[in-house]
Length: 61
Image 1 (tube, rainbow, N blue to C red):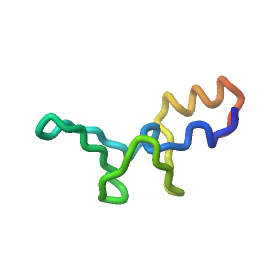
Image 2 (image 1 turned 135 degrees about the vertical axis):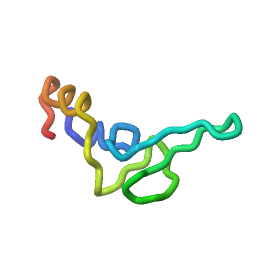
Image 3 (image 1 turned 90 degrees about the vertical axis):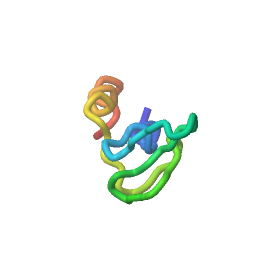
Image 4 (image 1 turned 45 degrees about the vertical axis):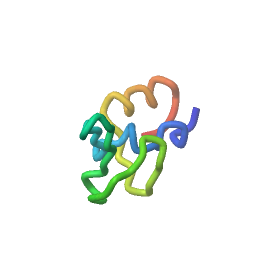
């Protein structure tokens, strides 16, 4: 697996998920706007557990 497999907002340190009026809101704290877990941006910075998983599976961080 290559790193592109993991490069989505949901695996980024800037990704925040919050519930508002029974609806889930996904937000990027770096870009300052709403996003979706499956979106991908050039500013992607993986969470620590994602880095470890990528290393374990032979990807690059």
